[in-house]
Length: 217
Image 1 (cartoon, helix red, strand yellow):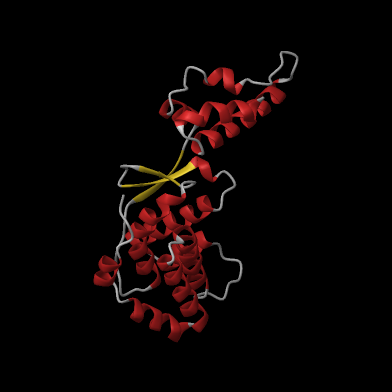
Image 2 (image 1 turned 60 degrees about the horizontal axis):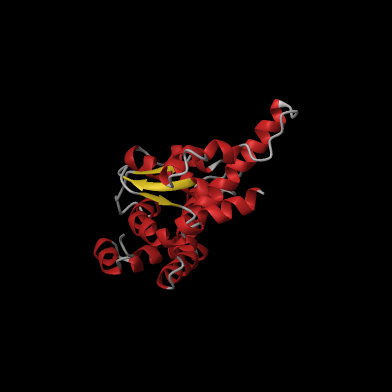
């Protein structure tokens, strides 16, 4: 897994020039950008990534006088081609990063390895790969784009990954009674599914079964 390589970033980008350009546009945005760099240096990669995307949204929103434009419509209005595609993927990533079911989502670069978003240690790798594409969306002097995908795990994906596919049906129907309505049965099954997915993503293989059964019984 890639570490955040400042030497590589400095070869690709003059951060002082980016910060100065933001300062001339808005002192507030420049200070925000400096704070993000401090977050990265301090190892707060999740916070830095989320704040970079939020900063991008604010910068794009400041280009229009329409107060209630969505991030999606702003991207369509101000970007084209690969940069537009990158910006839309960043918007989707922002939404996933603040989702209450964060454990369901992952990032994949070039459809290769998957990096679950509820694993804090993954954000250094994710941010390193997305840093220059975000800079390119902020500063038109740069043109780094990347093909990345925000995927969503299903319960079957995780059950297969952790080798519990044969036991999955029994686990999903814990608490379901014969006399219940179809709606009630589906609701319990859905709640069990979320509990199982959360526990699988937060457990080692050794402790996984204990945590799943404790959460269901």
